[in-house]
Image (cartoon, rainbow, N blue to C red; front, side, top):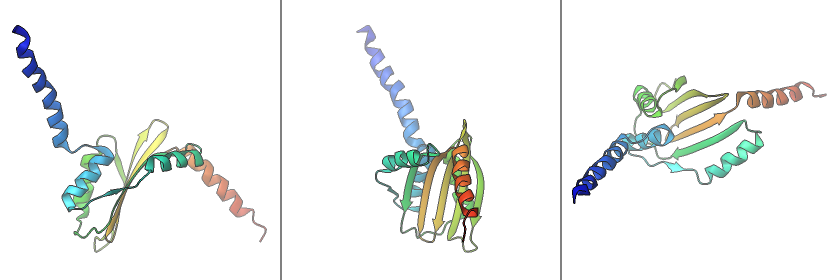
Length: 163
């Protein structure tokens, strides 16, 4: 009987972190997508088999591209304030991300945000692209050395044409 008080205390100890996590809406890719869905009353479509696509892209680029996440939002009809979208993404991405590109058309119906974060010898990229009534959210990890090798490989072929 003396140990029965531990049961309610244990339940409270387990419930507090769950409540905090549920209220936060998450962070990173899922947190950004969820916040966009909530704020703009839209539903994102997660690309099916993106794990397989990520594996194939990693093999095809010899490790240059991996850890791909993609969500697409169609029928995006609300007006988007660029400052608000930027703030929303910055808040949900979390620590270490730095915005490197922000482009907004005059009417605001086309917006692009690109954030980067170092991951050891790799670079994480997070892109939000609104084009009219479609928005794409993409996160990917790239190896700059492999990307440079691929770019160099193709640039050499361009100059060696005998046409």
